[in-house]
Length: 463
Image 1 (cartoon, rainbow, N blue to C red):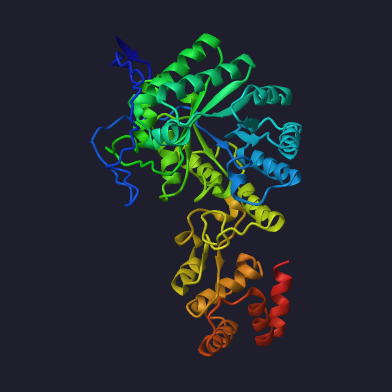
Image 2: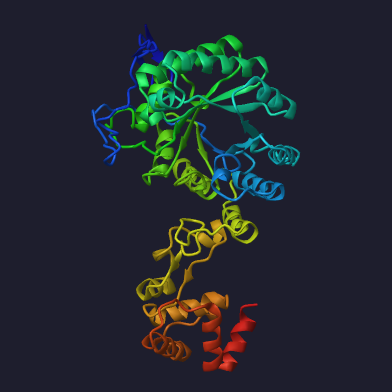
């Protein structure tokens, strides 16, 4: 059948109909994943069109997948982070949903407390074991959507579950029907999709779900889970690792609407952010993330990274409050005791900090030379100079202006006499074998020693 694509206004062939291939032996793609070597990236040079939906958004898994990798959060901590997340997502709900476990009493209390917080976004959803008892629990809680695990690679179906593909799909479809019968929107987590036989099981299963959705009149979401981080965004890369191919295939061959598609990635190969952005670009409306990227092994896609990526792709913040990103990082460190690696983009203590004198010299002239954007305005994070033996006169001058919060008309430059005196003291420290950076208290004391009157003046000017 030939139909007009209403987005491209082109005639497209719609005869594709993929049936389940119930193989006797698992398809493990041993030429790609031989386990003894780094997995290979294979190309077939097939290109699919970019097709970014008009509306794209972020969903959150901090309190589900993310929490599995850290010390358990308290109910109070979950509620505080949930409120900060809502502020970050803004009134348009760019952060649309957040998923919770419902296993324990504490999990349920946290979900209930967030549902009662009076916030429209993010919507509280759940993740449960796929059985009727748990579906009833979801219904009792008043949660309208739940995640259901439906592993789709033969690694999981044959090796973990000891089932055939036909048996697995029969089990999965039965579980989804149970959710529909309970009046709950199912979100099917296609686990390990980047090692799955795409046309042999993924597309046929997704097609069956779309047919079931039409019959029930209830939307069924598909979350494409790059469980091991094998996904790649390279143009012309072959399945099963191609992110563009996966998203295009689910949308084009299984006819899954963009708003029913969600990407969930892990960072095992440092590709989690680019893969998530690629999923958006090729037709997936939602990307699933966690705050600070916490999660199993190398973690999930950092939620704050995709908030910035959203603004990059859409050309607008759409009401998001990026200063909440800084407060989220501070909350993790001060209230939860989580150590944010200092060089982590947007949230690490050193992400917009420099120790190089040549950079500090440029920043004295105009911070835009070495700052990615106005981090003071957008993130409430002024640029920072860490002082060591390479910072030079410019670094010391910048530190003085920043530390004492001096107004523009009172800022000092690197030719100021006190700067030379402080640098001389710093040089002596490192000549005597010091290795660490100078602390703010140390530098403040050095200025006090060099010029008591100026020290007093600067404190007053910075108030």
